[in-house]
Length: 220
Image 1: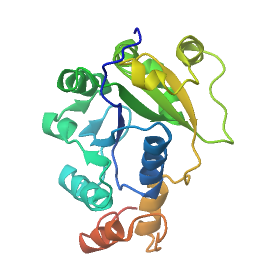
Image 2 (image 1 turned 180 degrees about the horizontal axis):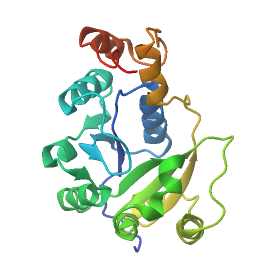
Image 3 (image 1 turned 180 degrees about the vertical axis):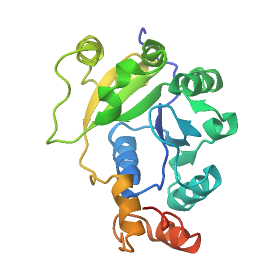
Image 4 (image 1 turned 45 degrees about the vertical axis):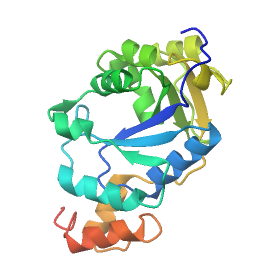
């Protein structure tokens, strides 16, 4: 897309099951929002991920945990569009909905390395990249795929010019050196199932919610 000067400040999109939301999610969202001067980060919990098993917590519980996690962060918003839509959560449907809602706002989709590695298998992935920028949150000790379709996409669309996120609606890929804590929700659920305290990995309010509602404790 060509450069445009009358665009609103970009917003970032962070999708996931958030089962549960943890400090890794919150830290990378804040880091990217501040690094690239974004208007907000929209947390979009999915109803049913296409490439993963069904979440353990209900949509209502995952929304409640997100709500508690972001209450003191004015730059963070929750968007429940995928939960309202139900059915399999295809990212392109969400991007198209947001593009209609924000026609003059650049959209920046945050992806972890696992998601990026499989991006070329996503439904209508070319349209996602046409309508939004991608920000790949990259652990310093990991390597991006060097071959295959995603390597080609990176070669064609990568930029190191942060202003490109502000002057075009989509089409660029920026690799962000992610210095946040490397946490997997699977590990947290396993810790809770074993009766271990995940203090420091979850906001206290989220752990209190999990204990109160006996979440994840029945896992084998």
